[in-house]
Length: 221
Image (cartoon, rainbow, N blue to C red; front, side):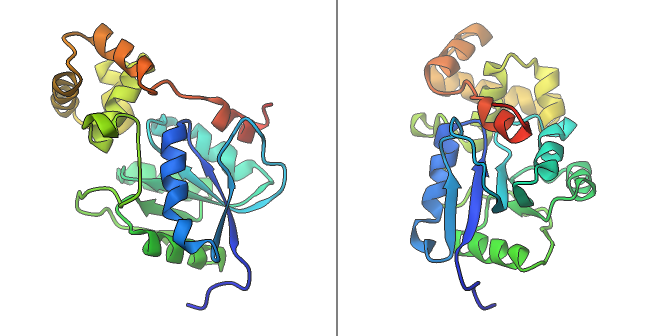
C-alpha cells in the first residue's frame, strides 16, 4: 500500500500518562507517516483528527460507553480500539458502535502504522484474537519497571480504582480464579500482604487514572 500524501493525524486516548507516552514513542520512526496530535489531555483537541486510537488499558470495556462517546465526537473521523482483550462480545459491540478497527497490542510498530494507514484509506480491520504474546516493543504501562506484566498492571489498576475481584473479572473477561492468580502474582512482586497495601502502592506508583483524558472527548472541559 502506498502511504498517504501527508501524515495521518492520530490522537491517543487513555487515562494513563505512561501508557500514552509509550504508545507515542512507537511512532517515533514513522513521523513522516503518523503525527500524534495529543499527549496532554488537559489541553483539549479541538481540531478534527484522522484517527482516535483508544488504548483500552484499565478501561471499563464491558459497558462500552467510552467507545460510544468517541464515535459520536465530530472531531474523531475514525475510531480504532487498541487492546489485548478479544472477548467476542467486546469485538462485536465495538463493531456495532461503529469503530473502524480493532487492533492487537502484539502488533509491531510497522504493522500498527500500516494498519492505521489502511483504515485511514477506508478499510475496516478487525483482527482475529492473537495467541497470547508479549506486547509490542516500545509499549509501556504503570508498574513495568517494577516487574509487573501488562495484564498484572491492568489488574492492579482496576484494584486501585476500587474494583472488587468480581468486578475485575467482569471488566477483563477473565475467570475469578484467573483474577485471583494475577492478584497473588502482583502482591508477591510489589511486596503487599493485603488489598489495602496493594491499593496504596498503586496510588503511589501511578495507577490512579486521570479521567479527564476520556471526559474531554465526551464533551467535558
